[in-house]
Length: 355
Image (tube, rainbow, N blue to C red; front, side):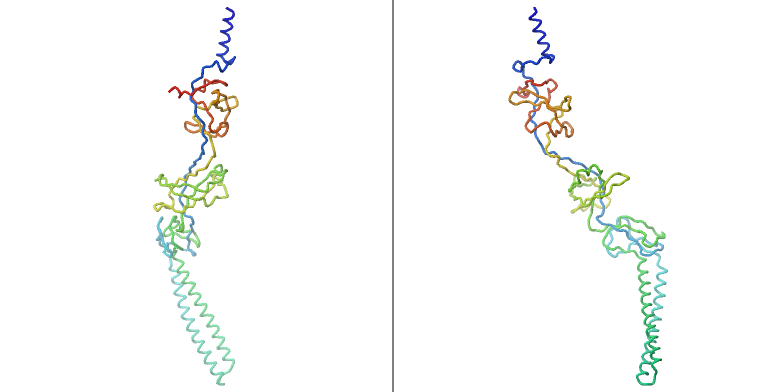
């Protein structure tokens, strides 16, 4: 009677874990076992940006005045020398007429002074005149020449001022912003139109400072939000050295070597960067359990088919899977389903073997 009671206590102690049962006396537990495989993990991150011109400029009148007409519309493509806007030119036209009249007078005075000088020079040569008269005629000629030069310069200035009342495109470009309207009074050099020069496109993104700790990717995959499947390449061309104090972001410009024909300024685009995370172990989510030290997995010794608990470092979690950075090597046998029934030294067998 006493021996049977002792035997019953031994069995109960073994079942409760207080006393391990020898491995040779265990019945192998059927569990699901997977083989760990190391894979090159790629991390993709996306941001939404805007298509802008690689270069743009602010077109402005060099003189001030009242705007009478704006010929360029927003989004319109203009050629070099094409008129964009017009100022009231009445004063400039009057100035040109006055300068032209002044030039006519100066030319007449110059002709008369030249004739007087030639006559005085001839009389002096023949001995009928005096040097004083000849020198006085020469002085008048030099004054007439100066007045003629000044009149010509004033006419050039007046004509240029008249030309400046018309704002023209400096090169082939596209109007991307219009800041003036007819009737508006503007000052000299006040921005009137913003022009995007036809020398390429770029996508501009606002990166968070944390995303740039590892460095900006050199190549970006781009796609329009309206057609996400049509992708095209971009190359990072500029990273702002300053952080926007308001948003806490850094502006990153991506040059587009071969933009699609249908893309234009202001289009929203999605930029996707791909970074390699190195070799990671990919396991089903139910392979990870826990120990007192943190996440762990049950490894199977392929020789004895016994299990042991090993701590692991989780890189990140994904849908239905876990990516491990440390703790498991390529080719290790890991228990997934049935792990809740295990303890160190437990003998297991593949559940699939019986199926």
